[in-house]
Amino acid sequence: GESAYYAPGPDSICMPHIDSFTGTKTSSATECYYSVLLHELTHWTGSKTRLGRLKSAPFGSPEYAREELVAEIGAAFLCTDLGISVEPREDHAKYLNGWLKALKDDKRLIVNAAAAAGKACDLLHSLQTQQQQEAVA
Image 1 (cartoon, one colour):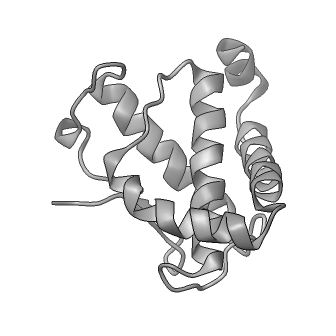
Image 2: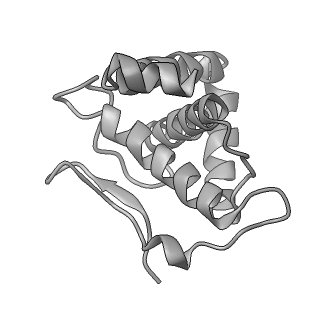
């Protein structure tokens, strides 16, 4: 099936059609869609033309694990901001070993990833008009 991803080259986000998402016990299909979109938007903020956080890194590397952790935390922050129910995604279980190893190797990783996620959220919020920001508040 289709997968969601941020492509740095063309600087675009590819998302499966919203109808391909299914709900869970705690999240609607729409909430699942937007949770994934917010994860990819967090990656988007890392572009060299924005926050300059993204580095080319192979799957399983500490750099890759760090960026995925930033995107997960950023999506969780943004979902909370928007009142979207968040549930851990099964397809992210493949990242757990990378995160665990990276967390063992770098004791400040979680703090640094949360700080980077906060900056990503700040950037995304700054792109909204004042009226849009007030509607969310």
